[in-house]
Amino acid sequence: MEVIGAGLGRTGTSSIQLALEKLGLGPCYHMNQNFAHNHGELWNQVEEAKTIELREAALRKIFDEKGYRSSADYPACSFFEDLLRMNPKAKVLLSVRDKPEDCHKLGKIIMRMFLGKPHDFSQKGLENAYTEWNDHVIAKIPQDQLLVFNVKQGWEPLCRFLNKPIPNEPFPNTNKKSDVDDESVTKEIITLGSVVVFYGGLAFLGYLSYKHDFKGSLTRGLGLLNT
Image (tube, rainbow, N blue to C red; front, side):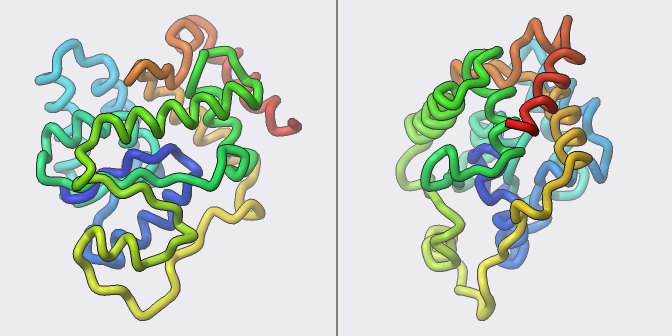
């Protein structure tokens, strides 16, 4: 793998997937690949692995299947440190928004459910989780291997970081607010619920909520659609 996406979901990751593939770094593993190839059980194996060796073996099952050369979005971003250990020469892409509230409604649902304190659905909890995650990534990755990237910046910084020529076309622009419906919300929450990780001090979903009250967690998440 040559590029590891460490940015949270709804930070332009679908656009980044298309951009990386356009730059010859595909296929790129995104949440949509999880849906397409029914990888839920494999991600459970990654999460439940008791040793680094077992976790790496489970990750290889996923990423070697189609020869993925890059990644973006959940659930792969949760394991950026493992992926970098397995691919020490890879570059890490931390996708960000200008501020947490710039993520649209689905992004707020995901971050509120999967980051920070398990039951902290407040705006402050969202902002703290978003900031803590980004700080965690920046602290863990050598500066010369990391690009903090906002999709609004377009091709130039990304291509410079990856030593690729700039394509003669606009930077991809997907995941507009109008493209998100209730069905996609439900699918992402259910799939993300299978990737429970306590990583870097951040809970991607309360462990007890997942093991004992996932239905309640899902209901709470869907209820946020009206917030």
